[in-house]
Length: 149
Image (cartoon, rainbow, N blue to C red):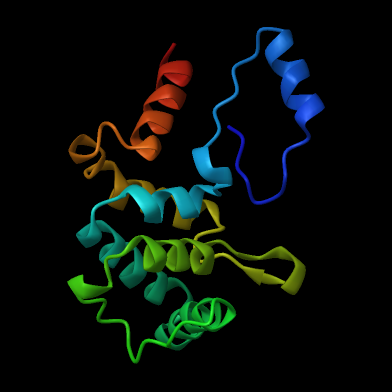
């Protein structure tokens, strides 16, 4: 699994593939969080944000989202109600970037712990059947196929 939190060394990827290795990577140079937030149904994203509130607190989640909004010259949101009107590609990117955090600023992502990742999988798994042609669902299926052999 090639997650794009950092640029991938192309020579290393090519070497793995040349040796017969399988590399699963998200399109659009996405991190896993960004891909999830781009592809999953809106109610699932709302559930993920609600879970993020449990993990790091409502104020921290809202602040992180609004920081990303400000970085992109977008208006802040007043709260975490996330009405359907916010379901746009641009806002989905914002949520994904907020969720992944920033390594260089020591702001860990919302779900960067094993137990949190396990809970995210529980939230996300049920939605995959509804988005079989989305890159996130295809990537998860590819990984499952490799794991389950």
